[in-house]
Image (tube, rainbow, N blue to C red):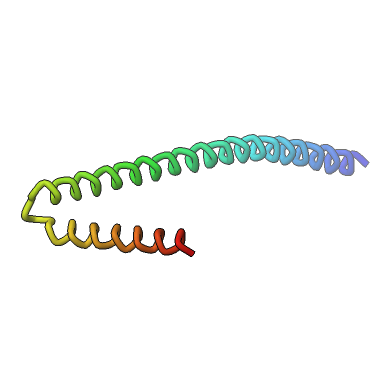
Length: 96
């Protein structure tokens, strides 16, 4: 009978340890999920910042080419042509 009691005590001890580990893993999971959310927000903010800087760079590049920079004249002409086509499309849409 004492052997049975020892087995039950051992099982209770192991179950207690497992429950404790489950609790610790649950807390770790919550921390990791919070960290993932923080990193997602940070990543999105970084992407927005990169996008904004790319826009600024392209605007400066276009402005330089319009000021007479020899390097980007063709690019400026293409951009102007694209803008004219977009304006023509908008005017046509308004005329309908």
